[in-house]
Length: 195
Image (cartoon, rainbow, N blue to C red; front, side):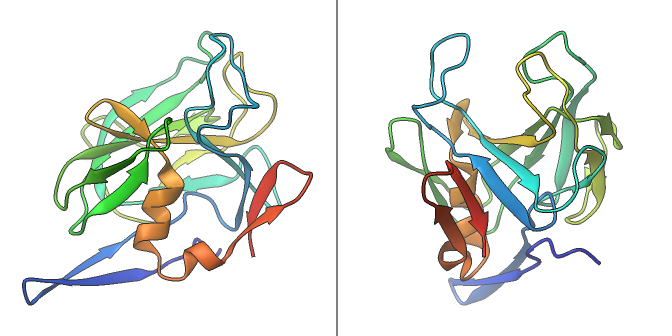
């Protein structure tokens, strides 16, 4: 089985242990463009509002799994008619607080059990439907290159809370113990990778 960073997270709050599994959506990802990168300018001349990732080995056609338990709220086959191409949105919550930065680098709190969305873009295919309840690790889509702003096979992943986009890597770091020490910046490449 591919390594998706599977980790059972245990948090103790009010003498009750909460268990939740949070997974990376692709196996052994390399981060190719980070959230709020100001060297990236889209057609609106704004910073990058998600995190781009691709597998170390493989390309278009690589399975994408659900990162969390949640419900599909959108599954749209836009192809090249929109910048983000085919998109999938999953609504979820976690049994612990998550602190994540917004585009201005202000730290925002997603309180435990509060609903947030994960938005997956540039998908080649979508393997689930609106209303479907997903479990972590369930295949939901296939890595692609759809959308007129895509420059190659990759996944653009967004974390959205109360309409505001936040750094999805902060969610993974909060949920997967030791992950922060595994993210390595590759100087001069503009890429980050998991060690």
